Length: 189
Image (cartoon, rainbow, N blue to C red; front, side, top):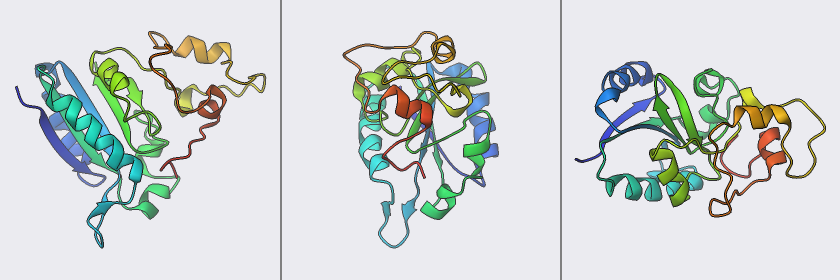
């Protein structure tokens, strides 16, 4: 069956999200892709990471034989996204730190996510669609412990990363310390 795609902006999100939730039980996977808007002057996304990830995500999802719903949520132009009070940055359901972010939505909650630095990795997309939580620490799970050394994670982070993938065949593009500090070299604002 073809992939079902819904589009939302910040202003239309609540209505579109309710439709997305109401149809969720019909699908094997329900994904939300938070990405940058296209710049009206160029008709291209202002976020190069979004362009790179979108192509890979669409290819993976379109070739799946499973029923998949994708809600594309456009974060707005660069100044809108850079605002620390952007609705999806402060929304406790999402707590976005960067775009693109691909979220697996199940049982009325985020069950896994791929953030800006990893949203283009095919193996991680496959794992997310399969329902395996991909190891990413969001802001609500960050530890304030200063004892983190190099790539070691504090015990609080280990406790919140249940069912996580920590495999050599799924490499990370940021150190654990960078993830804990919320640092990224991409379109995170």
